[in-house]
Length: 256
Ligand code: NAI
View (tube, rainbow, N blue to C red):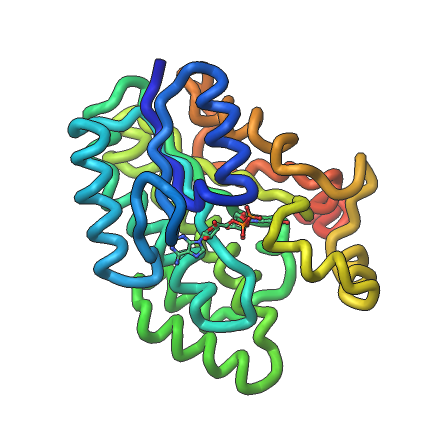
């Protein structure tokens, strides 16, 4: 049995993944704003430090896998802070614990939204590790009425960070696969308000077409996350694995 740390474990995809791994007999340490083993706000430096300190205590100095599910989709700078910088801090902060684990694996929830239009000022600042500049660029996007770009930019940035980082010495060289899963629309509290309103529901269906099986439940995503972070995954790394009912194939078509 393995020890997993899951951020965003109190709801949606994180919770469904925690439930599956627990049912498989693994130990799961959950982290979230509240209602989890570790309470930490991953938008803040204190919260990110608290995650690492508490994880070290609870896990006894070693983790076998880290799954970063904490995130939000607000048209607001907070979205780049949590979705990109919170995830990067999770991986960098917990890397020493993973390095002491057995068959260590790491994964973040990206999104098919990463293939939608983005704001290059936000993405570039995020990849440069400049949180202040990324927040400022996000605020500018909101001010000119393009706040939706903050979310797609956060997902593009973390996807590219994964690809750049996965092949480095301390990840691939240390035998640690690092991947993203890119969902389409999953039925969680994050999307419920959008889908409950017929007007925004129509926009979501246009933006994320899912010809295979339509919108998914988080339980349908969890087995893929479990496999990518299991010892069976020996060679998949640096990937954004789209689990989106065909949305990426529709939206991106031949651009691969
Ligand atoms: P959710 O809202 O059900 O769960 C997200 C969890 O993250 C919540 O428990 C929340 O408290 C936690 N969280 C938010 N801000 C945090 C912070 N500052 N510090 C610590 N924890 C924080 O949402 P869901 O749908 O499970 O989303 C999980 C991830 O999947 C997010 O990154 C989201 O962007 C991504 N995703 C979701 C899709 C969907 O259709 N639901 C589609 C594509 C990606």
